[in-house]
Amino acid sequence: MAGAVILQPQPRAWLEHSVLQPYAAGYGEHLDRGRYSRSTKRVYFCCVAHFAHWLTGERYAVSAIDEAAVARFISEHLPGCDCPYPVRRLAYEIKAALARLLEALRADGIISSRSAAGDHLGKELARFDAHMLEVGGLALNTRRQRCRIVGQFLREQFHARPIIISAVGPAAVQRFVLGDGKEWSAGTIGVIGGAIGCYLRFRSISGDQVAWLLAAIPRAAHWRLAALPEVLSDAEIDELLRSFDQPFPSCRRAYAMVRCLTDLGLRCSEVAKLRLGASTGTRARSGLPGPRCVAPISSRCPPPPVARSPPICATSGRRH
Image 1 (tube, one colour):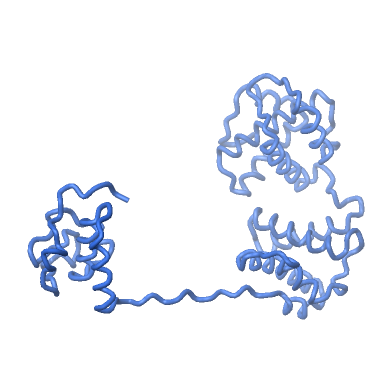
Image 2 (spheres, rainbow, N blue to C red):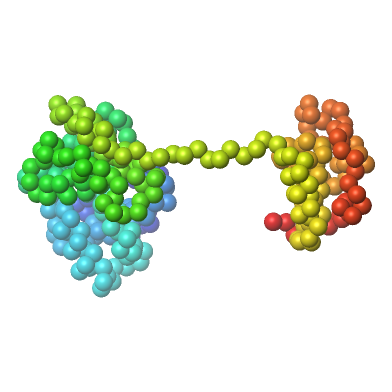
């Protein structure tokens, strides 16, 4: 049934003696394709078992299972649920689990799709989803996200009317991607623009002329971060060392680490692995395995003045 998912006896009995029993294995495979964790799959199966127990009591046929049945289960049964322990009663868990159940049943043709009653938007999104799966090989979560974005865009443009892509103008595409006045981040603009671009490329395969719409999709700017200097100047090093004149927690340890960086030229990872006693006088050995510790590393600078180089204590304070 659920593969590696182990259910307690009561939920398992509910599921095995319900109309959903023949489709439990398909539900598990649907969750596997979505890469859900084992713990999440167990929670979802428990929620479906609770729903299956209610379906049995209400004498539902599997063909009658749809969003209306799920809504009735959540609104009417859950508030006064007295099903015996163990049972899942959290609404957000049940909504997520049953949404995946409806997807699995529709994918296997067990129940009718919402687009069967002439829903132009539903049919278009179903074709788009099939294209992303069969041509692009996209993961379930990616397809779901893009269908949601494209569905919102098409709903704003056509409402319940047939979808005619030639009736969409570049300004509408640009306005939707930019959020129509919302202050979206560059990352959000990139995600929405990518979803709309994917849909328009799908329409181009169907023979629609969408080049002008593709060109209208705004591209989020990706500015390069200001390059940090590879080395500090002498003045910058002096300013850095002067910052240790004011005491703060673990000051001596931090000062010793900075001196290892500026005087010995050690890498940050090497300094982090140093232990007390690894350096003596003006010559030091990193104490690390590999070619860099074959010979001692000599200090290129004279030892610091006494005022700036207090002895390193064996106890250097709490770590940060």
